[in-house]
Image (spheres, one colour):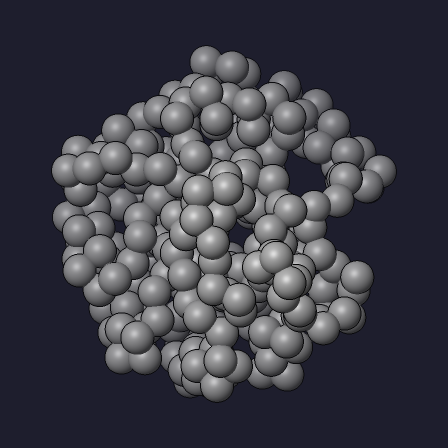
Length: 276
């Protein structure tokens, strides 16, 4: 289905759903996150393309309700998601979204934003946990991005359970309500990780996969399109048209499986590692 145009079925099904993954929006990012950073000008152009596409922005909860059969989606949905919790998010980035009437979902790494917290993320300007409620005031939904941003598919069960449960608890205390959704750091997951995410109470979990999602996608492995600084406006417009990427769900290929086993073996020697 790569390159196929978006279409809605007569039963209201949606054949392809772009779920964009952003990280930081800034002019001069630290080197380690620069590849996954767009400038404010680029970001504005992307958001204008979303508006011009005629697609309807929805949150991950709306997609969850649709995948679970509880509610329909608009015929041409699009999702905007943000990982980690960089300092621009509750400020200029949220304002750019709100100014265009666009909803979004933010996945926050609690160890990087909570007072006294620790994470594996290298140094960068980050938002504070107290600003999470401000995101909701701008119309964003807040989800968990774990505590430390470790490679979840390399962790022992106890460490994995801590990453899943402690991050959600911190966010729920800060927001005063249930947190329903998770994003796997750098998309790293496995069948065991997905099962434990579900058992921990997450209704959905997003991966990366650099693919379009669909109404057949997996609730705990929703595909996203990772936006890199080298992507052009034409790339964004293509994804909005439902082309330029394969459509999930699909099985992991041999390279993905082999890379996972290599990382697991390395983690046995070195311990938990940064997912990035």
